Image (cartoon, rainbow, N blue to C red; front, side, top):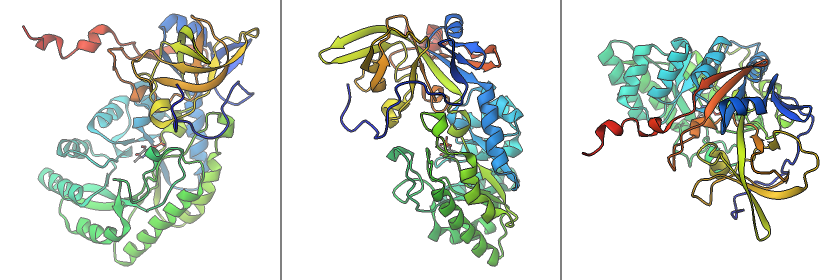
Length: 438
Ligand SMILES: Cc1ncc(COP(=O)(O)O)c(C=O)c1O
């Protein structure tokens, strides 16, 4: 059902254009690079996440090259997609990691991300997580409050090792993201430290025994396609850096966060140069090392969720396509009103185009993958490909309604490799079974 207020404005994609990317038709069959999607679905079942290694590497290369004049680190934001093989692919391409939990640190280290390329973000790090990250000797803690600063100093003092710290500043910038939930750079959110507080807290950080201030940080939101808010955020941080320098505190790192946006159509994405040209000139002679924390930009387009049509159901004027994937597999459409292009995996040219809602099997009215979409009417058994599902897809999946989570596959050229097996019913009851009431 099209819920009031749940749609974004703007065009709704109806068919595949000749766009760049890894998920294209060859002979009317959707492929991931050299691998036919129907073959992967037959081999690994559905719902299935398919990722393209080439797409990920291409994105890393182009973003990195755009910032080439600078000393820089792409600290991939693990929350976007934390699969170990994806992390390893990114680590081998030279990326570090931006983590927000002990679990993400564990994943990043297990995948081979060097600790000295890991930054720890997040508004609510527990003491145990601070201890864990300090012991791992990560590059920097992005601290978000005085309470956290004091806690970390205590942890550092106890461990006999000073924790490297950047303060995350809230620059009070309204970033024009498509959904309020992805804006983090303005005062009304819980994120960061107000600039007025920054001086006092840097002073405190310089005095406290268990920490050493080395950087400054901001993250103004996600899905930002306009480079201007980044420029504003950067100027805000550079002004603070300069005033701190005059005060005798020289910082080494400037972390501008992540949030570079992607569109439902890769051809419409802003090129990385559009961001770089607003950032590079201001940092070129600063002596600061730039850290970026891209998540979605690196892996969003690299992933497709493949789902099988279970039923086609007409209800009055509406037609529902009921698929075996739902909000438990891909939460973004219902949580963020995100628009994902949907393509039939096989083009059946004789099909009538019908306006449909693509919905999942979950017992929630908010369980949908796409609303009011014009699609060649699929039949039960057909496969659909949900594009741009590589970021915040599997990572936000749940087992609600006792549905085991999907399998994940990584394609390199024409070779596919299972990188997460489909969960089983045994996985669902792990941790409960042995504790079952007698
Ligand atoms: C601190 C921080 N850095 C980076 C990111 C990554 O954002 P994106 O995937 O939009 O690049 C996020 C996303 O929530 C974040 O909170």
